[in-house]
Amino acid sequence: MSRSRSESIEEQQPPDGGSEGLAQSVPSGASPAAAAGGRRLALDVHGRLRAMILSGELPPGSVLPQAEMARKLGVSRTPMREAFRLLQEEGLIDARPDQRARVRAVDPEDLDAVYGARIMLETLAVSMTANSFTAEDIERMSDALKRMQGVAVDEHPDEWHAAHHEFHGIATQAVGPHLQRMLASLGEHSERYIRLAQLGAPASWGRAYAEHEALLKALRLGDPSEAARVVARHLARTALSVLADIAPEYEPVATRTALGIAGNGQS
Image: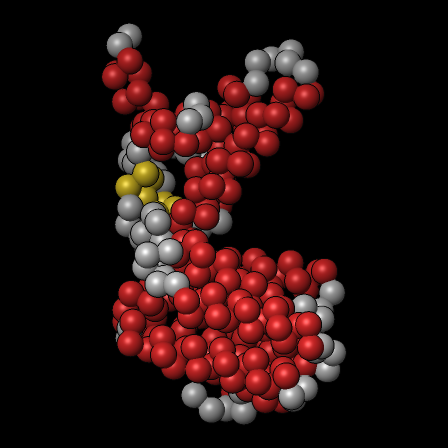
């Protein structure tokens, strides 16, 4: 069978083959270490593709040819199939038998749920952090904000998002590790929506930076209520901006309810 014919058949296999993909990646009788290595490779590929989707490098609707993506990342198609299966379980891609996978379109319900949860948890976290903020924390957070303001997000997206992640991480640092993991997961999931907001309403980012500065000021003053109000409004604004652009008919119940609870009902 020719290579091109073989790749064509490989492309048509559904990525949600479950354990079959892993079984093919490790020969029967292979050592546990080899099996663990195959699993780690699949997870590494999954993490790289997930980051590309969440950052917007692979925008909604992008076709994901399995063989081409495997070549791009320098891996075989077997860990790529397992990575696709994991991405499909997370709802980040759509893949059906005999069809190529695509990056899933933005789901208004998912966006609303993510931001509703993030508003509630992040307002809790900044409220706790405001009570123990130090001069060193202020300096670190100020530095992160300066780095955000000093780079063009379209030209240096990785630098901007790293600084943005650090800024919010410092603002929520007082909570325990379990809540930190939840916040990190929601923050990662939010990245694709932040990117859409940046593309859809670039003029709004002056206001966004003003909100970041207001959050820093509230933390500097040790004002938990003001810190919670600022971050709730800041997060809600991003969610509502994207929803107004992609699904103006959708009613964001979770986001507005969370804003009403954490942001004194002001939108």
